[in-house]
Image 1 (tube, rainbow, N blue to C red):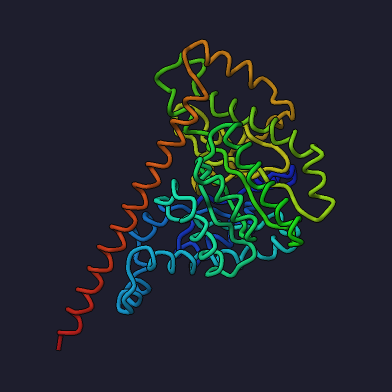
Image 2 (image 1 turned 90 degrees about the vertical axis):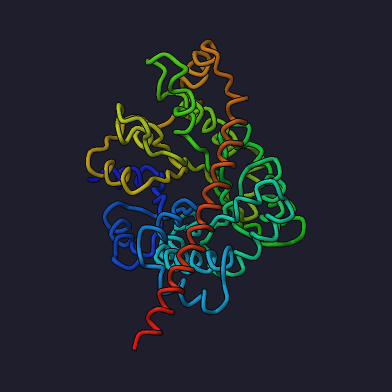
Length: 368
């Protein structure tokens, strides 16, 4: 049995951290679903920037939309929604067979809205309405300004993938926002079944401290933070408040491991997959990591509900001067800035490609 299927049988979903029009067209995504038990996917501006820049799959659509007067964000979201609705349809059988627990795809609001609560709420509602798919999450960052947008979006019936979470505390703030949104729906007599996941970024912790800690602590911080967060997640799942949701037909907000591609060439390329196996969770991984894990990954233990050695490991980091609270805030801030840059790069890519294709079309039109 493939290790990917073993994870699936354990109760952990494997989602692809990638999407391109090419993999939708050439059958790659269908193959991942069939051969590697992939049951969902996520997207972000960097993924789309690379896909549009490095291939010509989008050229015809960009040329047509440019001719129709579209540009910038509007043009991009049309392209992204076309891709993601196709992917959502591929995962729809999984979504239906699991009662809406699995089989999701994700589309991100503009990262430039990370500190704009009102703008995020409006953008999330508009994208959800445009996609018209029950298994499409709208990604909203778990920034201080994003948290109230999460609550309001859930109340509005918009499924949310909370992104850019780096710590237990940031996760709990997102979970609280989700619960408040559901409680408001219940009080208003609305359907309480609105899907959500909370995405904890893992590998960026280890990159941040790589040159600041002794060798024996390298590549251990992200996993320790994940274990600490997983303990909080398990405690929420058995709390009376969550149990009340189940009684009225709501579901839990699942915990998702993000940024799980190994960045250190000196350690296993499946490190964060093998170390974060846990039921009722999701792991989103890039193609390279998926293929590596399917080829030679090995499942060891399962994450302990009580967090295992997380606090002991984090205490070791504290003794070396690592302040995980301050670093979590820094990583979220840097993540927001990185997403902003990716978004601006994406807008530049679309603008330059639109101009190039328009000029190319004019050249062809002048030829006898």
